[in-house]
Image (cartoon, rainbow, N blue to C red):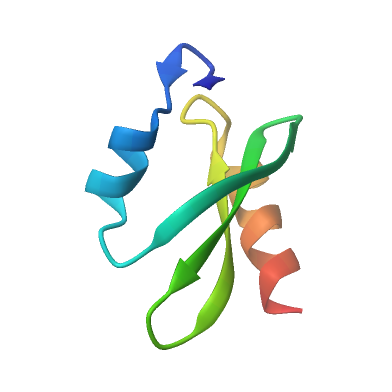
Length: 68
């Protein structure tokens, strides 16, 4: 999976998020790629990866959406 020239692989996901397992692509669009994964104590979780080249204002909107 590619995110703005950055290659997201199973190996990268596992190395970057070692506490998560069983990554499954849910969808992608706009500035993000969304995965479901298993966490050992939290159970099923969602991981949203935001493309590195988007601006700070877009990232702020994404974070505010999660908080609400």
